[in-house]
Length: 94
Image (cartoon, rainbow, N blue to C red; front, side):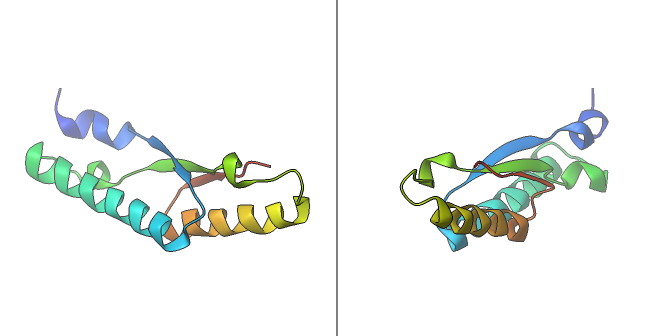
């Protein structure tokens, strides 16, 4: 089976922490690494195979029971990092 037959159907799942710039950089790096890997190592020719499709979630470990209003800001901050990193689907932990 060639890489172009199944790579366009692959998707991944990631999580986001509280460090905004680190999360955006991590997701952008994963997208670039995937494109390079499937093109150079596996010889993918279909541009749909080069796309790193992923869903992501915010981390619940950064939330606190004592400060529920701060949790709204934390989740929004993490979700913004995921969107800026190119996530196709975002799940927000509450």
